[in-house]
Image 1 (cartoon, rainbow over the protein chains, first blue to last red):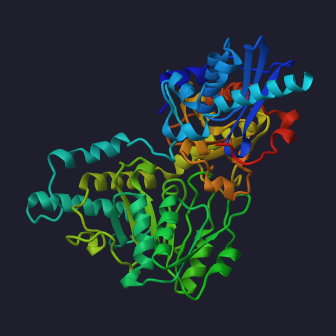
Image 2: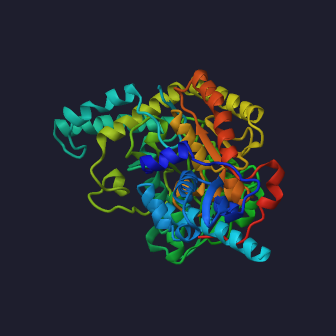
Length: 125
Length: 399
């Protein structure tokens, strides 16, 4: 039911971990629903220079988390904000329909992390 | 890589003996059991032979067995056929909250037609309370339906006592024994059963065949109308090869009962004992001893069941899970929730269901692989022991 790409990212997830001095952290999902993603970003000159994740969830949740780290790394914040749920799914050669809804939270987590970074930056200024 | 199959509650392999018994009925002895010529007569005779074996397995009379397309159809016939007898349009059905969907959805259907139904709760161990069942029986109760053993957590229900209570009130007692057959002794007389549903492929018979035992004298309305097969209770040309296979599987289940249940119990107990020793924060779901000899169901903190199932599959070990992600719904299994588990606990669940052909070597291979797979997923998980409290407080589901 999963594409080979999903299984690859699930079996060998990229960029798992935390960034202790992260510039922004995005936490989405709820353990009750079975999917939770925490995304950490480092930002320099409006560019995402490092990105890591930790995820509790099914195969699709882990694969989309892994994929978003690859899609967002090296992008400007404005570019990164534009990455949609559909973009993540397409990059993984699609997700089963029932997973589009519940387990495809990675782009939301990224936007939350960027929001967190921007809020911290505004507070400092 | 030789694969390991621990998902026998999903389906089981057709045994070679069963397959051999069935094969001629597709090719040479293909007659319609209703035909009067020799082709028909040999089909009919083989079908009746199978009926005897199946009846013997549960201590019923052959004339009390109606062949169906499977367990689901048998459950549907029992619920709709008994409750809706002669056009009855209201009354009360008593069942449990851990039944298979074949029962719960049939009850929901009857509710839409004007019936009322009650789902008995279960203890944290997954067992229905006999006293609660007695209290819930009403003047207008037309059917009591309690499964013999649960399909997810394997818990064995007190059907003999509940059956006695129902029968003493003149209420027909149905049991869904789809998972129980071949794994526990069932005697429809001693166990006070009026109707019993079973399915061939759960005990090494073919798919697409099952049966409903209907005690002589039980009032029931057919749900499939036509040429009057199966004493008018289930029209449709009989699936003779399937029936022959089901009969053979029943014969083997009875013949090998002691040996196969002892094997499965040994394997199960090694799994149940070893997992908590090998993996921290792993817990058994369902009663420790009042469970099917072939069922072990565990939950693992901080990780999700489908991910665990997929990881094991990549190592060649087939298991199943009741996590929401495996079912395509947002809700985890209704059985796990009925145990009083939190959503996040119900998500991290793994079901191992053994078969007569599994070995200690296979169990040991699983036990060797499991700790690493759980650790890998826990490393990816944002939750851990230290963080449990904070991380588990959640708002509404983000979608």
